Length: 185
Image (cartoon, rainbow, N blue to C red; front, side, top):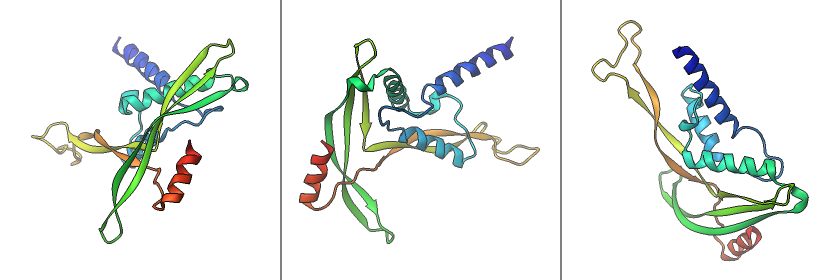
């Protein structure tokens, strides 16, 4: 009986993961957080098998964007509306360890469109930053950290928070920065 339940749970998890699989055809989708999680897990030799291993908000946003992409009728028009923009100073370190402060930009948008039946549909999304997970090794039994037969550490990798990574860096020159922002809007 427990094998049937675990198989059912596996199918359910596979179905949930398929909701964020595939390439969009009508809009651009920021899947950088999900990809960063996949890459960090892969570095440890792991594969994401449950949606709970992704950050909840990012999984939900990508899922909603994929649904919007599947339902929207492009000939009726797709609008992209920027709702808010944030200019944030970030600190990066050069090869000598010297701190360099740069201005990063991230913004919240909304896609609007119509489906085949002329119903209004929309989806929210974020650009400019993504989440990169911190993976830590947690011992199963701290009193007995090593397997007595194989000598390997007993435990598993779990996420212990995340860091924000920014990928839109504003130009230093005021004229170039203004042009960049005007082109974006």
